[in-house]
Amino acid sequence: MTTSCRGARTAKWILAVVLLPSSLLAEPVSLKRVVELALAHATGAGIAAADEQRAAAGYRELRDNYIPQLSTGAGLGYSYGFPLALEGSAPALFNVNTQSALLNPSLHDFIRAAKADSAVASLKTKDERNQIIQDAALSYAELAKWEQRLAKLQETEADANKMQAAVAARVREGVDSEIDGKRAMLSAARVRLRLAEAQGAADVLREHLSKLTGLSAANLQTDPDSIPAPPAPAPNQMAAKDAATSNPSVESAVEHARAQYLRAQGEHKALWPSIDFAAQYALLSRFNNYQNYYIPSKPCNTSLGEFLCVTNQFQQNNATVGVSIRFPLFNASQRARAQAADADALKATKQAEAAKNQVSEETLRLQRSVAQMQAARDVAQLEYEIAEKTLTSVQTRIDAGTATLHDLDDARTQASERFIALQDVTFELQRSQLGVLRSTGDLEKWALGTH
Image (tube, rainbow, N blue to C red; front, side, top):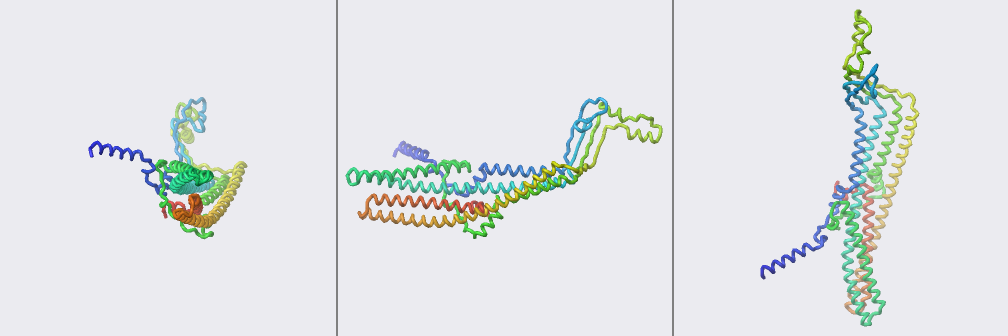
């Protein structure tokens, strides 16, 4: 073989590999990998993390009121007559102010409420993680279903096309009637419809998983064997108990009710006395006329006059340190605000009870659905096995000459329909099982294998 021939063959192989569909070159992605990528890439996780950071910052903002706040600046200005205050402070070349809370019962409860809100945000982040995991797992399982259906339908399409061609030949020969030819065409058209439906659904799911995980939609293929079997269902009472204690949405509602109760307490305690620490230093100027009002008007020739001279003498450096004590006597507006906070706390408590009841009922419904879907899957499995055996039997009869092509077409169509029904029931069973796992708080452990 010449070098040019070998080069041409090599070029053909390279061109064939380059032109292969990307789906044929792609490696299947496991469910665990898809879930991990979804948790790292999904926008919902980023939004929940930002809300959690905001809640934590709100808690620190209230807590840091006990840390002295320090500010510095100057209050420069022209004075005519006695130097009046500028924005509450005397005109000064340089001033330093500090203040902090010392004893504030209202602030104490507000801080506890903010800490509970931070816990609520953490629980909502956990619930959002479960939502992302459920979305990724269901999309992955559904894509696996459509991929398997596509492979099956492609085989069925080839058989249907052969059947259509054979019946068309028999019609031309006068063996079969025109209606028989139309029936064969209808069977092939139904298979093409199923193929288009499966291909469209698979493309949409690949695009969704691509947006969820950041993977390329063209190279995304599933590995059905990577989907772990769900754990055995727990008794109804145990599942309801787990849902009431482990479900993040229920825990979030309960913690939110606690935060609202603490906030209502804080509004009531806003009518209690409070003590704040405050200090100020100011370097006063001489061009603001301070010295004109602090020079003594009498001679300092007596001991008392000397004392007065010292105390009334102007000085540039001045400082004040002390506490600010407030005793609220009457505040109708604050009382109304406290009553509104009581109503919010009561509403949050009732919402927590409703969330607990809803999750318990939903868990029971999903459990019943799992039992029903398991029975339906068993029925669909048996019907599919019977249809497969019937197809094999008809094929044997065709070989023996005791059955017609129409019998084979009917048996093949029946087997295809039973396979599709089995797939649909199996997926609905998976949907219900994942719903139970999410309600009981075991979804992440099932998807990622964590303990």
